[in-house]
View (cartoon, rainbow, N blue to C red):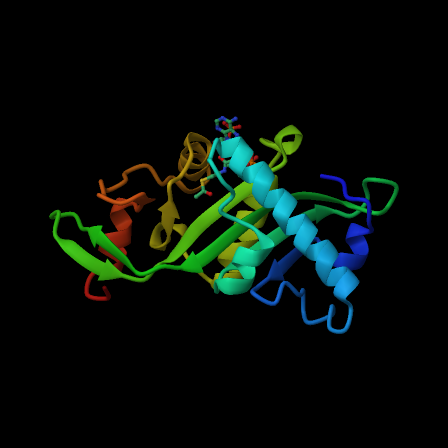
Length: 191
Ligand code: ACO
């Protein structure tokens, strides 16, 4: 995804971690122009993700990021677009308090880290970029993906999780979240 400004100036790292400040390490302080560019990138990614999932409205936007304690991992390719860089995709995560049905269909309360939105630019899907950003997040959080919950996962995400992390046995829920069997086995006594 190309933008009419320098992506490498905004996001020096291959993967940037953004929070409610929308700042990669506080470097936009006193630079409203850079903050506005960053907001444009997040808004455009959110819209593209919603289109790809046929959602009625984006679940990711700059204004939502500012008001929610979520983290967004943004992946770029710094060499494309004449050296100005392009954005390849993003992964958004956050903690949610959930009422889940366990293996005995008993309601339990948990507050797992959840995958809330995930998108790789169409022409670059199935090239390993999703895995790159997801693995980066898992290392950053030092987390096993089976301990996460997945908000309304698309068929592509379910295939991705089965393929890369062998997550196949999900436990039916009454909400939009998907968790896998070992979520409960690995957390017994903790939730
Ligand atoms: N059809 C079926 N499975 C797919 C597809 C597809 N078109 N694209 C990716 N996958 C799955 C497959 O398991 C694939 O492995 P395979 O090619 O051997 O079959 C695997 O993902 C490929 O892994 P990566 O290349 O690392 O994944 P990618 O870079 O494509 O990123 C992602 C995965 C983010 C799901 C991407 O396909 C995408 O943006 N899809 C559209 C948006 C979407 O559905 N996002 C998830 C929303 S749900 C949520 O966020 C909670």
